[in-house]
Each structure stands twice: as C-alpha cells, then as structure tokens.
Length: 329
Image (tube, rainbow, N blue to C red; front, side, top):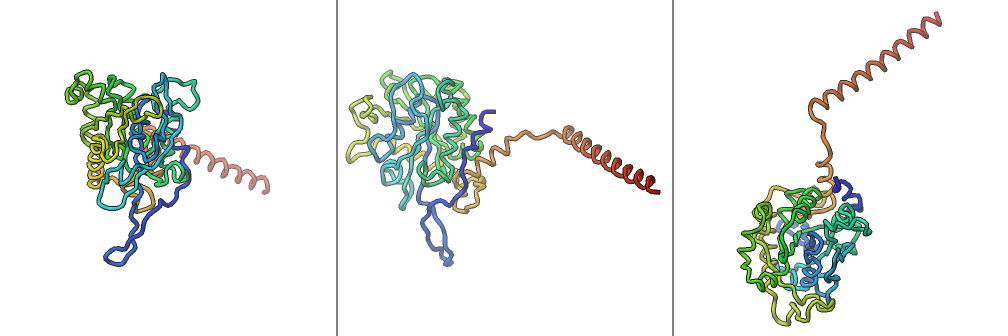
C-alpha cells in the first residue's frame, strides 16, 4: 500500500527542546512547553487558510483558489501568542507551531510531489527530529483534519482519513484529531444550518466525529484571512478581539488533550516526556504493525521447509565425511 514508504523520510531521533523543572522530591522533571498542530486533509480543503488564521506572521502560507493543489511541501510557522492563535490552551507558558501540509487525493499524478506516497512522506516529515526548521518541537500534539464545507464529503476525503490512520496508528491519530470545516460563511449565505449540514454527512463522517478526541467539529469562516493573496479584503485577525473559530478550536484541542491524558496509549519514543505526543518512532511502529504476517498454516509450512533443508544439509555433510574416511582407509 502507498503508506508503506511514507516513513522513509524520517531522520534520526533527537531530543525535543524542553524547559527543566524540579519535582517535589528534588528530581529533575522535563516538561514540554513547545507544542505543534499539523494541518492535514484533501486538496482544496482550506488548510493554508487555517494556518494563516493561527500564525503570528502576515499570511506565511500561500492560499488561493486553484484547480489543483497549491501547497507542495510541508512548511511551518510560529502561532500567534499566547498559546494557539492567541488563545492559551493551558495555564502556563506554552508556545505553538502550526504546520501546513500538501493535500492528499490530488489526482494529478503528473505533477511533481503530488502522489499520495510523496504527500504522506511530507506529512510524516513533520515529526522527523532531524528537520528542526520545519518543526522545532520534533513531534505532533494535534492533528487538525480539515474539510471544505462548501462541497460534499467525498469518498476521497474519507480515504485520506484511512491513510492517516494507517500512517500514524489509528488510536494515536484519532485521539489527537480535531475536525475543522472551512467555508462556514458559504453555508450561512446559503441559509444552511450547521447542525443540519452535519446531519446530512455520510455515516462514515458521523462515525469519525464520534471517535476523535476533539469531539464536535469546529466551523471556520476564513474569508479575508488571505487578503494578501487576493481572496478578500476583510481580515479575520482583528485587533483586540479573537475570532470565534480560534476560540472554538482551542476548546476542541483541550478536549483532545483530555482524551490523550486519559488514554492507555503512549508513544513508543524513548523520551519519557514524549509519551503523549506522536514522534518518529510511532510512525515506524505503525509501519511495522502493517507489515504482512504469515498465517498459522503458512508459518508451519515455512518451518517445515526450513527443517527439511537443514536435515538435507546435515545428511550431505555426514555422507561426505564417511566417503572421505573410506577413501583414506
């Protein structure tokens, strides 16, 4: 399957930047203060617009209307502080990094970097500890799974979810997943109620929403976020106020954090401080779990063949020794 080669781009493991603190017993405790949200989804979902709404810079991600995917490589930017897009997720000093990734299911296989194999490789690179320029946190805390609410949820959209579950491990991906629907303004302009829109989604989408850690989806009106790219002149980042989208996203992230905290799943990474994150080792473990395993009968036949060849080798060796001995006598 196409996800089998996705982890090939992973670099060597390394320590994640930490701030050090002391426990009540005087032991040194390492606590993560840098966190990362990765935007994933199909082509045209609006991931870059979501990233621009969260980033501290002036639209670091290119977002424009196009017949095919605009983003070809993963890129990251610091989130506007405090916390995630200006909203603190927890009490304390957390800094967030947002990563925009190429869209899956482009369908344009002739375009360099557009095959799903290559796109999954770009997404996996987000937790490769060797690429500190892309993700200084060296891990993934939250997956923001982005859908375009201005169209219908397609089989390709849902296939994206399955590919991501296979790549990162179903449990780890779903627990850390929040769903974002962009173009909520289009729904409202059509007089469509958001609850009614969700009730009309395919059964597979409703099942997905019932399993993710982020709970109910977040609807985003992102018209104007990409004004520098000519989409709209109205800016979502208004001075002195927070957009409802960012506030709702922060609430969904807190729900996902609670799901991860209460889960028995832990990262297989060697750093104890990474147990609640997705790191490079988890991608490798997921790939190993997908490797074909022999059935009981096939395994028995394989053992029998091995034993048969071993006996034949032993017989040939013993027979050759006797013949040499007879010749010398």
